[in-house]
Length: 346
Figure (cartoon, rainbow, N blue to C red):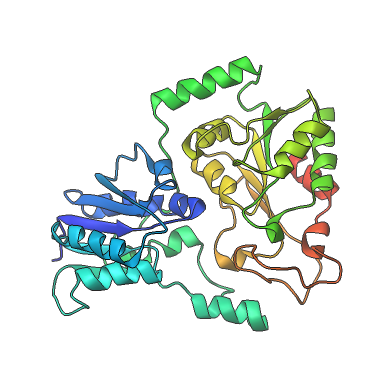
């Protein structure tokens, strides 16, 4: 019976994907409780996993390393003599690492378990609208499949994050300073990594106005250098609180834990919120649920256009240019009234 003592899990990025990988760390420890688990991840993103009790060691690596730097990393990893490599990324870089450590599959150890990226099926859906992903599992479940294939245990796929007491106290003080009560405010994230995922800013303005009329507070969340949050803060001067770029991802997750609900584009914010058991209303435009990133909590809701648009989906991650004559029609078709009604039902 295979019982690895040293396991290397590879997941470099991105922020949302790292959150969705958290079930892997927990469930590997359930299956192999005596194993020493090391995560190889990207510096900058990996800190969202701080304090995770299921990860024994972290290796933070520069995402933009040279080929020689990558090979230097591989030399260091060889010395650790891992029994199992769990490739939860399946990128060219992670494949290169796994192949080198396994002697290009010639050695018996370490074993290599890799996820299936489903890239060709996604490409068919994007390019030809041929949907072979209709019955695909969510990404957090998909990331567990190599482990599930090697155990009879029924694996659990709930995501999780672990802010420490310093972060908990920091956010408590922030709430107190801004006169915010836990579960009495709506968190809004109006930005995304790429433009094809962004619901129109004027729609966010209408939604925020409606929420404020109901006596609820609004807290904006997001990362640095996001023009949408700055514009909304200016337009609602003194009426809303802008927490964007004020906190690390793990600190933002703790803030989201206190929100009543989160309204966000298809971005990492939805995954941070759900990992802290806060429901999210997530707006999908260029992307679709078949890619595996739809929200999953009982109180969460994915909203997408009800119109049949031949151009959708058009991007796997929001990059690119809209090809519809009515630019961003997929997102414009999700009215502020519909989103507000969804919030009112929660």
